[in-house]
Amino acid sequence: MIVTTAQLFKHAYGKYAIGAYNINNAEQAMGLFRGAIDSKAPFIIQISKGARKYTDKKMLEAIIRAADGIFPEAIFAVHLDHGDEETCYDCINSGFYSSVMIDASHDPFEKNVEITKRVVEAAHKKGISVEAELGMLGGVEEDIKVEDGHATLTNPVEAQDFIKKTGCDSLACAIGTSHGAFKFKGKQSLHFDVLKGIMALVPGFPLVMHGSSSVPQDEVARINAAGGKIAGSMGVDVNEYLPAAKLGVTKINIDTDGRLVWTRVHREFFRDKPSDFDFRPPGKIFIAEYAKFIASRNVLLGSSGQLDDLRASLKK
Ligand code: G3H
Ligand code: 13P
Ligand code: ZN
Image 1 (cartoon, helix red, strand yellow):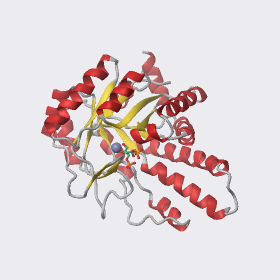
Image 2 (cartoon, helix red, strand yellow):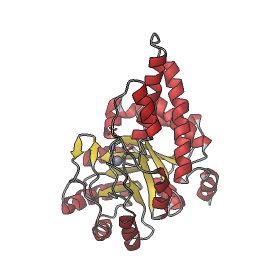
Image 3 (cartoon, helix red, strand yellow):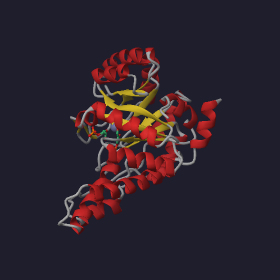
Image 4 (cartoon, protein in one colour):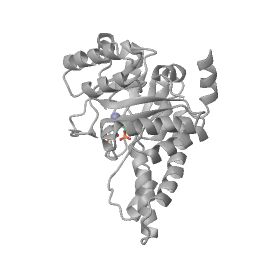
């Protein structure tokens, strides 16, 4: 069942985080839904601009509607990840999305406010909520690359002002993470001080953590043992998900880790069966492995086991 992102946030805020997982194809959708049901967790499906272009935005919509029918117990929201203004309007007008992200975080504060405000006005007219971003994460997302040293953490006072000025419904904050598989050099922790500062100024307001993949080192080792060359990768400590959730992080974005599962399964499969060329056998393994991965993440996010209580609260 597709619900609003606001309904998911209301149930989760301050207690656990909703996992927001990107999908690009049917195999990812099957693994995601299976894993969510196995762990009895609500979730958010994220669609990036790149995903909408990969096959066709209509294909993804059809896959999600089909998955909803195959897994009638599932409760989830559909979200545009890292949208520009034009893509936000397309999703708002499509009637399919529960929420959109307008990412104008690379623009100066006032311009970010201006753009976000316009998107919020259009979205709210249709009952759709808006995630905005303030501060700059490092790493690569779509066509934008933020070099190390140019990433800036979110300023709590600016965040309060930004939320007031734009009317956005949730805020992606830069708290030390970055997109992709190379987040940190050496051991680093999330900036809980920044989260505490924001929560103190805007209590009850849902925050979002991008760049939350943990980049499991055993996964990377298996990829490399099967011919991969991923060196020096490092992700977020999974034991920091729940403490962040208790400080208002209500949505945690995970994409890269799913790509690593895909890469490990396919590299190992074709290494061990070099004469095979049918994509369905490794595809089947991927669906099962991705489902296991999703279920394990939902346990760490605290969303596992919340489905029945959420369903009951939606009926009230
Ligand atoms: O933050 C970006 C997400 O991981 C989506 O990646 O833009 O390559 O689909 P993508
Ligand atoms: P990762 O690259 O850490 O998976 O982050 C994904 C993300 O933030 C999607 O918006
Ligand atoms: Zn992101």
